[in-house]
Picture (cartoon, rainbow, N blue to C red):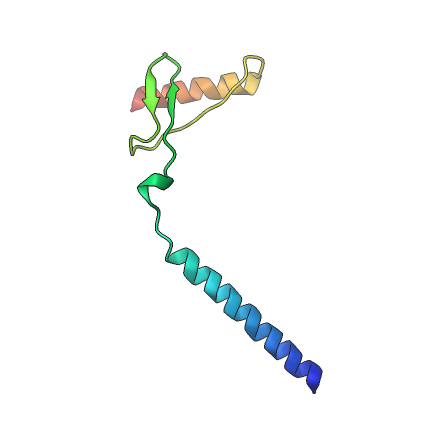
Amino acid sequence: MRSKRYYWLAGALFLIAVLAVGWLSINKTAKEEDAIHIRVKDIEGNTVNIDDEKPTVLFFMAAWCVSCAEIEQSLKEVAKDK
């Protein structure tokens, strides 16, 4: 009898904790200060501000990486289409 009560109480407390965490995460709003402000140079040497409120793709590669070079070519083609 006691162990049944214990399991019900533990289950209820767990459910309350999960609901509380969910509620807190839903009600959290992003602030402008939360955004990351980064300036980087693109492939052509132009300075790009990441906080331009536009979607931005960051691609990190190494000169020795064969698959990176292939992906770079695809990204250049996509950039031309913009």
